[in-house]
Length: 280
Image (tube, one colour):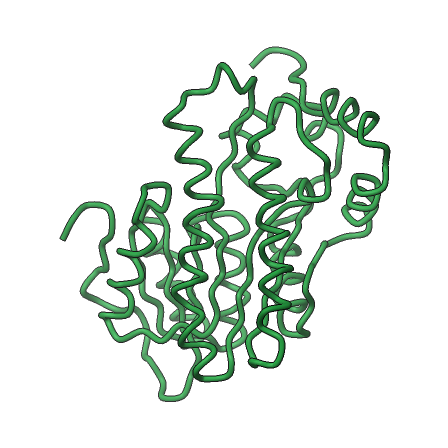
């Protein structure tokens, strides 16, 4: 087996007949880990996917013990081409039936586009866009055949913005996720399968540090939403069949402002919000 996808031979917890299974990507921390916890609390068996196995194993043991569900940890780097297809092959070969697909894995780059590393830029777009679409395409035939399933795609509040100076490619990738999910939702009408886009605002995770956003006014001055609250809102919205979930009043205000403000003004505001202040 290659080093990109690895399914450990053991499974944590006991799988019960008739229990549904959720697959969560980017489940090692942040919103992904909280989404896994929310699904486990609702009685779902889980397949947890991320690049780091240690936190997945720890989370899997915790959820299996606390909720009595079965949890399988899978190591995969979905920023690599063809990783989604290989992951799906491994998961289905292990006998998993995916009833809920949570496409949470994503990354962001902060800086001027012409200064970005081309490989890092390509990996971000592969992760945020291509792997998300590929996994959705692979999960849907079984869901449609069973006439039940849920797709939860994690977009962002920036999906409603006309663009993000210093994060142009990231903003565009999240706009794609929202548009893709809304179009897919219309395609799925009458099939018993639902599609929901989660559009969180600034959330208290490690994302801001990895993408150098911690020094920007966006993250320094705006209140950050706890990842747990975001995950709970997402699961409630998905269960109720909502097409778009925007957690929190402040986030909904930002979404409205981004969509209906004049483009030139919104772009200048975003430029100011995304320009780092102070030292690293």
